[in-house]
Length: 78
Image 1 (cartoon, rainbow, N blue to C red):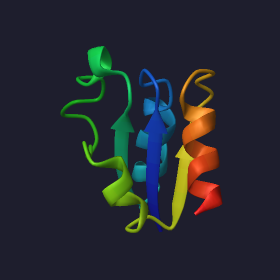
Image 2: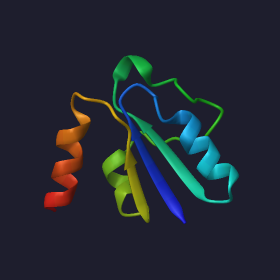
Image 3: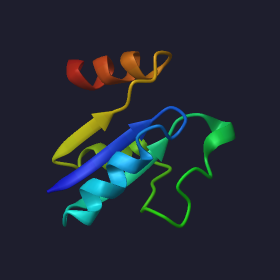
């Protein structure tokens, strides 16, 4: 399966790496500009989160309380 992880600050990096280690395809996206290097070299990353949504079978948002709940709702609405 193809998993797209969306993280505020990189909180779900360990989970994304585990999902990848279990044989799944993974892309990781960080929304916070100051945290863009989180996971660099450890996992495939995408800067184009919305462009990767169509690629993914499953989109996972971590528990970031700020912008991500709104972002998840916008995806559900479309």
